[in-house]
Length: 462
Image: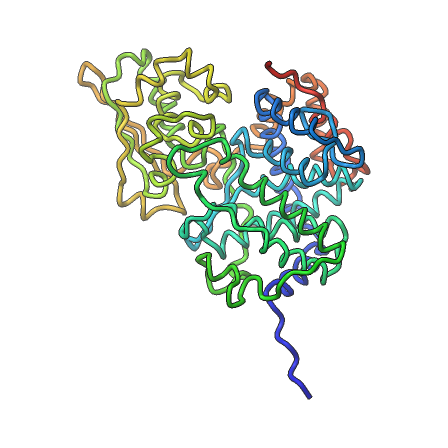
């Protein structure tokens, strides 16, 4: 009798994803998921302030409408599902109010909240319930963090979102009712659609940096549609002779250790996660400086990862919104000058009018602190030393940012974040009602009330 053929990793993942999706959610995890949905929804609403991006969406959707497709947020026009998912998922990232998971073993990282824009787009299209969305979110969050524990794409010059090309078909496929066999084929097909290289994050950072997860989600949906139609891909897509594991640094097991979703960091500020602690420290010092013109020089001490991600040479000359949100010196300068950070601070017109921020950039020096490098990723420390023109010195040191699991945002603070951006779309009273319904999402039979505010046509600049 022939030996039973060993299960491939993609087959194992297909089986386990279906098992995971069927597990009961305990009350503590349910509350955690609702916090994440609220937080991600705030980021989506904030992104709708980007009228230039919405204008691009409008032009894109006008090229080929699709009456059976998915509505593109901010435009109010339907597009082919894959294209609509791409555009809507950009809005999950554009504001940079995405949360962050860092592998405790020093592997990769991800933004689990990216999944919410994907899930809401599909849930609206497929007619899923609030209970369905909670289950979809739980599956997506666990898979995205599992893949971050297993892979470190940036080490091999791929974008950290490269791994999303493989878990998004599992999430989407589950939502669309694919069989285990079809889920397996969707991963295999996705693997043949190309890994996301890291060019968007090096040199002059462009706005494509906000599109990297979206491009994976778009290809993930394409692979699911192809698998459902009967297309098949090559086996061994992960562990085969020319599989993904030959290109991406990976740990011995994708299943171990299990991800701790409670360790996810929520952002207080609309900027890169590695800029959060420096912004906190700069805001603290700004309140003590008063007049920013008194500042002579600024020294920022951080860990190596923060420098590699946010203090590269082009960080002192950021030329796009994404470059500014990913620039540690720019974020520190803006916080010192304005005493806070707002979404609009990263726009082109802000840079043109607030010359003091750009003028401060040459005064800022970023240096690695060896002890801080050792403390990461359990901590995300930063120490800022500001020397004033009169010779006096002001200093602030933090071990982690506000929003870290060691200093988490309260439920009320997350609600206020939603109110800040959703009120633009619905008014404050309606926004408060919507927030209450998210806390009771398992009771909701439809999701029109949640996605309709996003479907409004946003007025764009000519």
